[in-house]
Image (tube, rainbow, N blue to C red):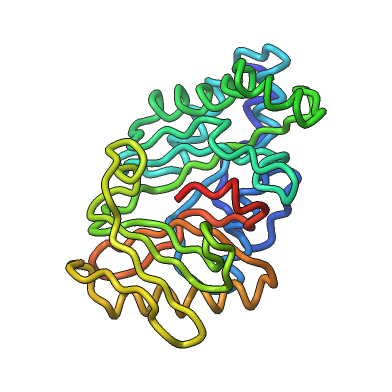
Length: 259
């Protein structure tokens, strides 16, 4: 293995002090949540320098990553592998759903395969077409990859500080039992609550999710939006004891919201 590749650290835990140049916008958004002391899953990053080595055809990069995974990450746990590019989740360009994410990944070989899958998704026809509409060159992509511990969900869902249908200044919470992927992949109908100026204007009548948890989600969402200073779209998981915030993005356009 190349001596430089073997010494260079590509995989490490996300910390409050990290800047977006190496960890991407999704990774940087998580550091903002860490500053606010809200709960997020344990998250590592495979930084964008590894992606650069991959593009340059450095075959040793996979071996180097495997060594670092075994050294730093509990490989007995299951992880979500998510894109964190420099160009996604922006005000103008959201890139929502353009890059791949892979859930329930376990073991070093499977994690490496999932990371490479995210890297390869930057070259997909859909992404190239999207880039053309935004006048962005594929070489402008710097792709970091998040390795985020999976939280066993009792409930999961989304929380938005603006109504995606009307644009009203009100909080919308949606939840389903189990994983949030059921909202899209299985077409499940979520429980829904809408909160506006201290009043619940819509409540899920038959939900088994404790209402106290819904109130906590609203309270934390309001605090996060207040600190950040802009409308937010967040994904959350409740494991039966605590609420974890999995992803956060600024609401750039109501038409881009995926609810």
